[in-house]
Structures are given as C-alpha cells and as structure tokens.
Length: 296
Image 1 (cartoon, rainbow, N blue to C red):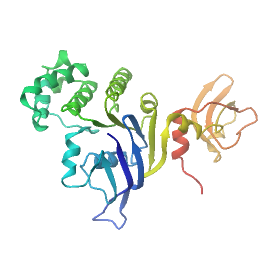
Image 2: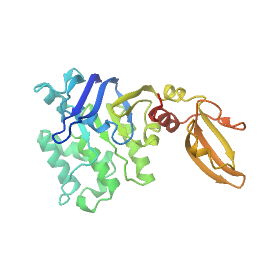
Image 3: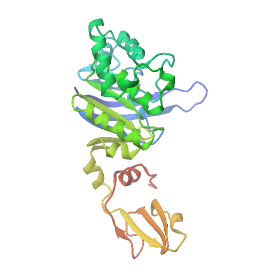
Image 4: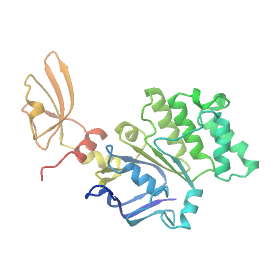
C-alpha cells in the first residue's frame, strides 16, 4: 500500500491576525512500502502532513491518498483508519492502567474481534519487549517504555501503514537504537513513515526520504542521491583565525578545538581556505545545506 500526495496545501486561518500560516505549500510526493523518512526542522510541516495522512486534519487544497482512498473523503477515511497505525508525538495514555489493560482498551476501540485480542496483545507486547512488564501500571514506565507501548498500540489491528511522529525525542542513546531497530523490523511487512528532526534517526533506518522546510518539499529521493546534492561542498580545515564563523560564504557544521588551532567542518560552494580539504558529506551535511537560507 502506497501513499500519494498531490499538490497538497494546508493553510491555518488566523482569527486574530491578518496573516494566515501556510503549513504545507503545494506538496507532491509518493511514499512506497518499507521505511520512509520525513526530515525537517521544527515547524517545517511534518506533523501537519502526518495528521492529514491520518485523516485527522483536512487539507485546504490538493489531494492525498492512502492506497486508493482519499484522506478527506467522508466515507473513504474510515477505510484508511482501519489500515492505519498512528503514534503521535504526544500520545495520551491512562497511567492508572497496566500496559495489557491499555492495549485491550485500544483493541476494543479498533474493533478487533474478542477472540483475537489476546493473541494480538501478547504478540505486540513481545515485539516491543514489554511482555515482562505488561502487568505494571503505565505511570511506572520510563519514557522509552512508553514510546514502545505507543508502537504496540499503533500495531493493534495489524495495520498496513504505520505513522510515527518524532518517536525518539527525549530517549537515551540505548533506547533510541532499540526503537530504530524495532521500526526497521516492522517495515518489512508494511509502510512505516518516520518523522524526525534528528538526522541520525533517518540515516540509520531509511533508504528513501523527503526533506521539508517551511511547508515546502526541498528533496524527495534516496539517501545516496541526497548525499550527492552536497558532494564537493563539505570542507574541513584547521586555523587559528577567529573570523570563520562571521563569514557569510560558508556555514559552520562542527567545531573542535585542538592544540594546532580550531578544526572546522563547513559547507561552502567554493574552497574556503588554502589548506581546506573536501570531505565526504553526511546526511546531516546534506540536510543543513538544503534548509539553509538562500540569499537569492
């Protein structure tokens, strides 16, 4: 099952100000089965797009389809919801329930047949590594455990499409790795759309991605193609001069202080210093290059 977005625009109308907010600006892209990343800074429109695809928010114009169903069609959106698992950035849970009780509640909402609920809940708990803690109250869970429980509830009903919004925000490195591996495993049988502003999460899990900035599509394609957009524009050099960060012809990506001076990794169209060397770009380099302000 694929997702198709065609000239999609979402405008938030203001009741108090004359200026409306354009959250999505004539967006067009196709998302196929497997793991797909949605990368962009805060306020780029990622959450708005996910809410539109989850049928929670109507577009202002254009169209979006999950499979053959249109997201804002009053009849077809229910077909989408039957095939969709959604983990928003902030998932409200009932802290006085155990994980097993919470999943049983979700299964009831999703109308999973009673005879299947026990099997599905057990399978989701095992998949997310929560089987041994299934009887504990949710309020005793760590942030990482709650995020895994969020994935478990999204998977109830065996959806063909899973949408997760900023799932690793606030997690420690070990939980982030565990969470990323879980999503990759899930994507073997379904479409998983992962939204994040953390480039490492996308780089470690997705072969294809889209980059959003101010509601506009800056890139759509494979990781290797993304890296090619910045080839020959990433430089490294060491200097004792302190004016590097004031230069308008480059963007500083990383700074390391050494005994020889300050080591810089920068983005620039041309070689920034005599001793600068070209280095291979990373996903973070390419991402920062795409979303940096342009003078034109």
